[in-house]
Amino acid sequence: MAAPGAGASGEDALIARYFRPLATDPGAFNLLDDAAILKATGEDLVVTTDAVVEGVHFLSDDPPETIGRKALRVNLSDLASKGAIPAGFALTLALRSAEEAWLAPFACGLGEDAERFGCPLLGGDTVSTPGPLMISITAFGRVAAGRMVHRSGAKPGDRVVVTGTIGDAMLGLDILKGGAAAAAIADDPSAREMLIERYRLPQPRNVLAQAVRDHASAAMDVSDGLAGDLGKLCAASGVSAVVDMPSIPFSTPAASLLARAVVRLEALVSGGDDYELLCAIPENQFAAFASEAGSAGVTVASIGTIIAGTQAPKFLDAKGREISLSRRSYSHF
Image (cartoon, rainbow, N blue to C red; front, top):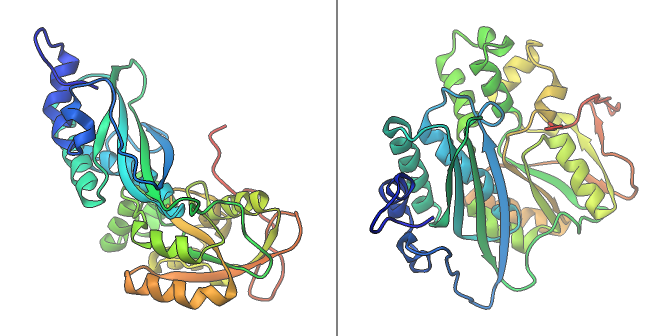
């Protein structure tokens, strides 16, 4: 990703107009080179990458500014779960056409979030495609040497803890697609908009990076569904878990739709796109973690316990009976 000089191409002009203003880190060289530099600081560099694809992660008529924000935020969420502070990102953008009406708000939304989260553009690539629009971001973060929080590390007795609420994004997508939730919530525009926003604009919990680093024995973000992602964390740690379903935090609209049988519990915990943090917190660390989260304005809920074993996590109802889940997570394949 390089800005134009003599004989600049249309691609160069596009980069200079929309993305050069986002490259505020000196190591990006104003996008005038073929590579960027992240200065060594003695900390570990954390690298993560996620792509969002039209028709899979966003709809073709979603506002461009929300698409730009979501593309960055899903990567910031990964950094937060590792206890890392954002340092910058590289962008690959595959476009069917270069239209001002789409690119200007996309770059604006992306740029505002890059500034808000302290994660400037470092470089990347723009290409044309006959297929669906695709945005791929590789994000870099910094963490003190040896302090990155892994999926592995959870131990029996740790609490299973999640931030925010679960299942809202799945419902927001259902509403946008005209599903059952759309009709059931048609008379509540504020709830409708809240659920749609949760789908379009995930809230990465980067304010909790230090709390995760200081208190979590294992962590990841919830991207493919709480049930499935907890299974991944447990598998990496060589443990299992027991989850109290009534303790899982649902928003008021989600709880209402669940109570009215508009949506099934299984769908809420397997739908994905929540981008909340899922942590294993030792019992003697939970109060401090919850206090720091509260001070940062983030709600947390203790929903279960890590146990010994290698079986899939169990989900229990209010009477302690195991709930059978035929589906635990979203899968691309």
